[in-house]
Image (cartoon, rainbow, N blue to C red; front, side, top):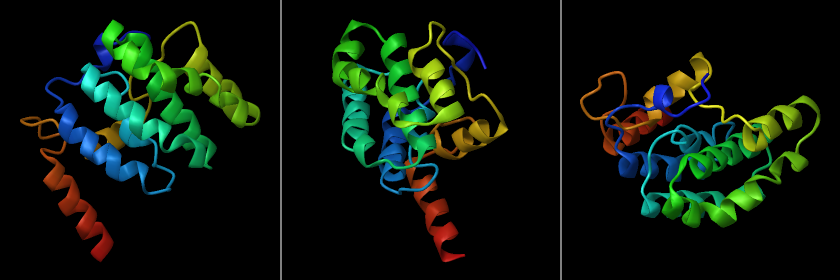
Length: 165
């Protein structure tokens, strides 16, 4: 866990390929529905990529039911917005305004932690724990780094084999 972007950056992430995975993941309605965009939250994105992330978020956030997904999707938008340049912020502005209000949908401790991650003075970066790191290794496309998947096609093949088993 960090409070700046640099230690959380993964070198050579293919954001476009990783966004294809995020698109697939956000449609699943599982506990990991939000994590496809969450693993991108500290990476450098272009305005076009930010537009895609905002679209995924805005078309999904109202239908998300699990507190975990509401929290992590909104945290992703918050970090991307707060770490982004002016053009990225412009693409994420509407999503960010909605994300800032999402802790109100949650209860108890989750609401408090979510509010700290989304609206806190310090930006919380990094994969935080082993589960986050393991998810990132299976869902971030990082060609040349064998710790991560190499392509969207590899992700699809692994999804297919999990479904068949």
